[in-house]
Image (cartoon, rainbow, N blue to C red; front, side, top):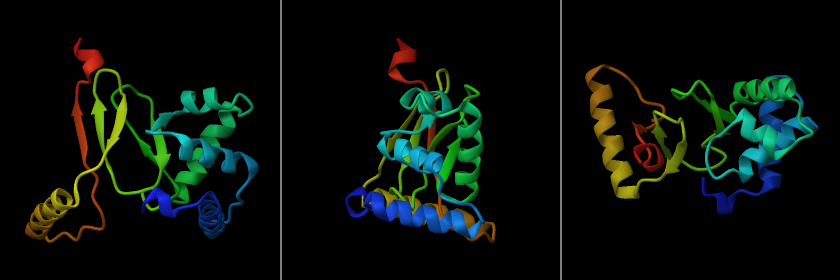
Length: 151
């Protein structure tokens, strides 16, 4: 979904609905977490979330992120640096992939052109078909070393 087509009101309605489906409420702290993740330009850690709002309690952030993840609103990305990174789910933002630096754990988002994305999907479907597997969606993570860690 293109961010230009998603308003904060739509996201709030979607979040409230998805939370209600798991018998949870869209509380002030959950709204704040969604807003922080919406503002982020890349997946962020809990420490980065806490730095962006000093009023959030660490225990509350952990608990609420788990609930938002359970509701399908937030995705957790695990890297080699033992710190999970969080971002809004693709149905809220848009389909994208990640570049992950193995030494420092930095994660950056990237998009493929429609032509390359279609070719990738076709290739992945062929692989899945060979295994009798049906693909719901795909995720591509490129693992390596960022420019800062190379220097």
